[in-house]
Image (cartoon, rainbow, N blue to C red):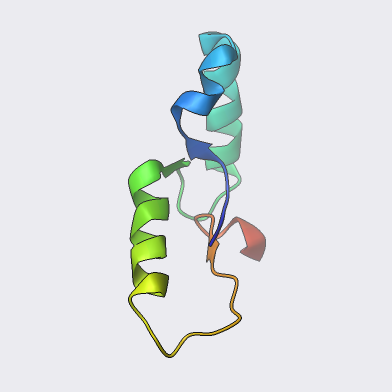
Length: 68
């Protein structure tokens, strides 16, 4: 699973105003219109792990960012 920008605690070191600007910019550039949540990535992992027929695939989980 290859996630795009995901709102997690890892970004907490960045000042809140800068982080929110970063999220807003990313959301505006993403067809989904938002940044990812940890639950989005977790659901993608569950889908990949639960499918025993998938092999050698990288699943983008980026709200469509790669399409833009």
